[in-house]
Length: 72
View 1: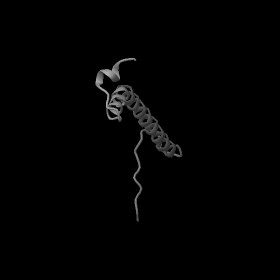
View 2: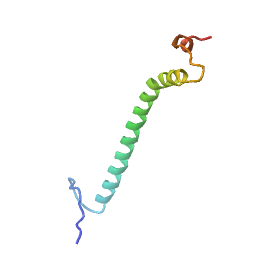
View 3: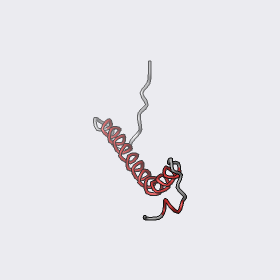
View 4: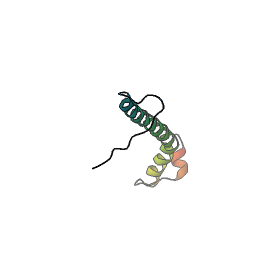
C-alpha cells in the first residue's frame, strides 16, 4: 500500500493542514515566477543591444561596427 508523505507542522493538525500544503505550493509558485521575471528583465536589459549588433553584423551588406553604432 502506498504511503502519503506529509509535512509536520506546529500546532493543531486538523482540517486546515491540507490548506497549508496548498498555500505553500501557491507561495512557492509565486516566488518562483517572481524570481524568473526578475532574471528575464536582467537578461533582456543587458542582452538586447548586443543581440541587435550581432544580427546587424551578420546581415547581407556586412557593415562595419562603427557604421552600426553611428546614428546616421
